[in-house]
Length: 324
Image (cartoon, rainbow, N blue to C red):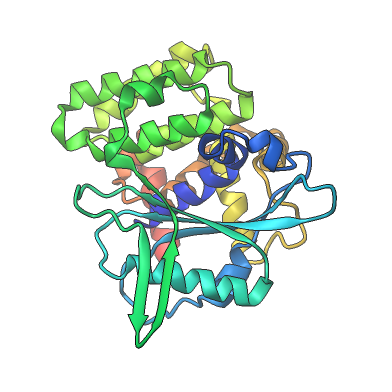
């Protein structure tokens, strides 16, 4: 879950403009896309502090400051919750987020629940409470991934549709063979490149596809890497993958306070990643990749060695260093 949470948080930032266009047909009329988004993750953590002794499931949530086109400087808040399991208290938690956020900011809020679970009957759409003549109902936008049609998502020209399609493939992967799963991932990779998306979005989507949809057999990871090389006509260590990993490290660095004061955003992260790669060389990029995979995944040493193009001994030494 830790890895999946990290991937969802990152990809939502990478394609948030497409997220708004995906759910609002008149997004260009509603939102001022010339103004940068502000991701209020730290503020959200202050409203809902994490209890280190709490072993309950964690959730992916984003709070984003978005400027509207209303002639004056006005902004709203977009709350996004990604839920991957059945939870009877989910609707109540959505309402709790709403009233705490509204109490803090006093701004209009639109909320989205993205359900990535496999339970067809789990479809919370609102929270309702009534007592002695007092009635309350809170409705929020619901997107049930399991109900989406793969063909429609595949035909869409919106990058967020590719995110949804990737998550849908991951959700249904238990129903297909490893060979079929590999074919699905390769076909989706070809769609990403053929859609004409901006390069930085292709890189982000490719990284999400690579790490979110997991194979049971490490040999298929190698085959998928080969497919990436063939589709993108790039060297074995594809720059897109390196940039993706460096961007993840940059985000982790921000959380630790190592990069305070820097602006967030994938573009700047990629630029810094490229600069870092030039300065320290391909070997340093590989080591960085290994460290990120050790921190963000539960892959074994041999699988990490294949993905990072290093020997297994290197992975073992870095794993021991992290554990010490």
